[in-house]
Image 1 (tube, rainbow, N blue to C red):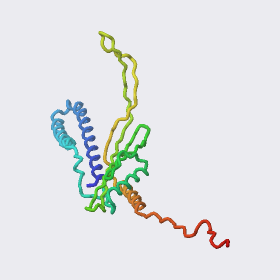
Image 2: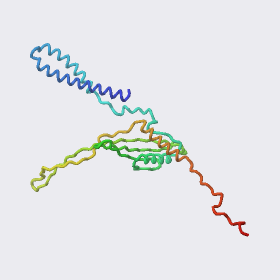
Image 3: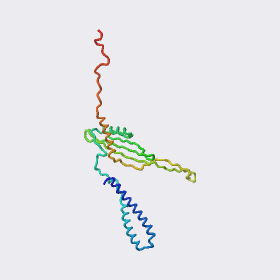
Image 4: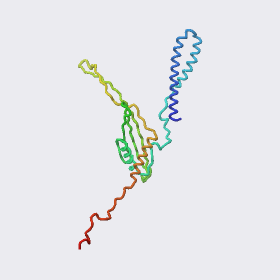
Amino acid sequence: MSTAQTQASREIKWNFCLTALSIKSGFARMRAQTDKIHPMLFSYRSLLLQTALLMGLAGCAGPKPIVYTAEKFDSADVYSRRFPVPGNVACEAVRRTLLSQGYVINTATADQVDGRKSFQPENDVHVQIAFRVVCAADTADGSTSSVFVNALEDRYALKKVNNSASLGVGALGSVSLPFSSSDDSLVKVASATISAEKFYARFFQLVERYLTNEATPAPESMEITKPLVPTTTGMAR
């Protein structure tokens, strides 16, 4: 089942639960009003309806989906690519790729590159993307390597924290004063690994472009075949 189908199924189930709870609440109010009129008939019908509602609500209280069930381990081309270059050359191309896109490089070695970049999509929302790239040799001679990449998205929200003033007074201890202040602070509200294939595809395309530029040999320097100043041989005898 796809992610969209799973999300739609969850929404349908949630709407059903809300409807069942609403019916149960309305049924209780109706019973309080009409129980005195037809006590026997209403008791029988209420038993059947309450049984059906309890069976429906039992499904709402089922186990929550476990995150790791979505890990299929069936595709290796989303977070990795193989290049016909040594690992240190591949990591250098990765470093230049991240630098060209405004990422701040935290670590850059022959086999690993870490970088991060900050975004502010809204006034009170802060997003940070952290890249971690590892370059590993695939062959004994190191002529071919694989690049493994992981991008983590952290989302922060601006929250107000109220601070009340207090004063310590000898034997009385701490006395709270009617003065308070509020400070704004960023609080992490979400953190998840980016799993979009197109996101990583664009990253690897730019890495490959830098590798192609490095593989292009530099033009040879032109040799001067004629002297800049004419010789005086044979001019004066």
